[in-house]
Image (cartoon, rainbow, N blue to C red):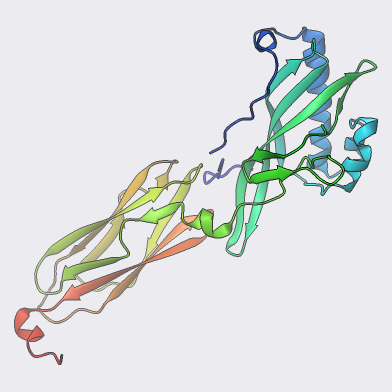
Length: 273
């Protein structure tokens, strides 16, 4: 599921496959590659459709119990990104990118989840299977640890921390001071450190002579925007403190920015201390 706002997410390093150097440069015979792609596509389409019994048809016999016991995830869509073959094209690791969602208290965040799964050729057909292996495997959402029987779930054991996600969109300051009696301006920088694009909007209750706007409302990963603030007071009376609400989509994060206004020196002298 993408978002113009797609959290495509999340900055992912693909898995290291560990095949022999010769396999890296050997292209699988077309019939082998087509057969594997057809099975992988059918396997993940069953996850899209929510028909997990159909997915079980592509699971090796020695891994059916583990597949049955694992939590099942229904995806929005999946596509094959990369295949690495080994053992004379009888084994393969397939990287599949699946559109899913991460649910937070602030709402649903679309993510593109890369899944690396092993496949093996048995009796002329490709089957998904679980490799017994000690230790954990790195995933975009943390480590997948081996279970007590040595099998690993094909799904992430740990989802991302909501607070960590929110910290990936930052402002360089949350308080700005302007003058209430003479023209003044300031800027606040908004930075996007999320893996995907975000959309920004700004809301506030102002007064005559005060303006605030974003110089851009859509940020790709690594980009920044500026909130441009300007005050041209119509008089020298004290001005109320304002709070700008910067809203980030698709996370529904709201970042408050306070704007305070200095009063004329002669008035400041009269204020109680």
